[in-house]
Image (tube, rainbow, N blue to C red):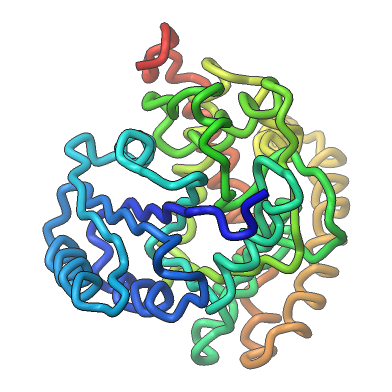
Length: 341
């Protein structure tokens, strides 16, 4: 079996001029053989110079010796699943991997993916680590993003042994898998990867987690931005439940359950029945305090700032996600439940 399969690396970006230069530098530094690599840069009608950065990178790749194959493609639909389908229509490699524009790739990222794929696997992926905070102000946001209690509960966000998983971040997927499973569902703007992972498992493929594969991503720069992200993520979980409920697990619905429990406890309190609210507060406060201490201690800087901000940031994260999920469920007409496009 070919130990260095030809790989196509796709980046779907919209207004990513702030983050794209660093990612393109990571691609230049990859140890994977250039003659076995293809880069697809897919612009979703950006307005901030993203397209110019992509074109400059493509021209630079042509001057390399040996040259690196690079294409700049348009995604007029602007959404991520449509951009992924643009990549599926264009890539020429034996396997395809897509990474986000704000990801950070170590030099051996593609090499580690290829080694994990080589023994005969079809789908491999690794661990996603939140980048370290650049200053004390950013420390609580990084702690929130990495915390298992707030944002980092997915198995691929945490260290562990090599094993089969239900979902992977930035998986390397052989061409035969997409030829069998099909294209991304363009109705699912933020949950297309959950749907695709479910369809791959249903088709009999194993999603293999290899801990030696590591990439990093940067947390949102503000708490408001992070809360907006969580609300949108929750909303799309709620919307997607009308289309593919099998693609989601209990952890995706935990914030919704907390939101319902809090609403019920507050309603009971309004009618002078205080016990449910006090009980819920006690049950929630225990893990909230424990994770605040844990996540603060593992932060390399700004530990006191983390300890002061995390206890009240956790419930905001959970409520935004839960209310978003409820909004998605109630908006049953907000997504076409017919055949996928």
